[in-house]
Image (cartoon, rainbow, N blue to C red; front, side):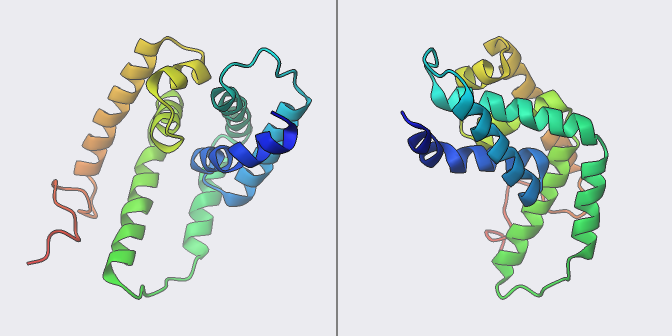
Length: 177
């Protein structure tokens, strides 16, 4: 696979992974560029699973970025969200979807870094558990326990959410009376 095919095939997957990890479009674009630059100059002759290999590079880049910025990125996101003008949605479902996504992102940010990384790789980048373990370079059981702990913690946090968005199994769209 040449560089162009590599980029065209995996650009969206890598971008979305970076976007979920850093919660910033501009930073995700920069990180995505860095990932593909490193991938294109690397020796790929022994790479068996290209997607997992690229996402490992992306995970390393995101971890480096987050480690450098530590709490700064959370402040940046809060500032961005507070600076956004409130828009009245055209449809109730659109508003509820945005509200749920926002709540989910806030709760996801509260997870420990290693748990969040496994969570995002498995659920957002749609990697299988073995692929996630390969990207993180940890045993499969470790990935399973991180994801399980993350699910339990997310359930607990979302049930305790003061906005009431996640209290029961029913969705707002399905709760019409």
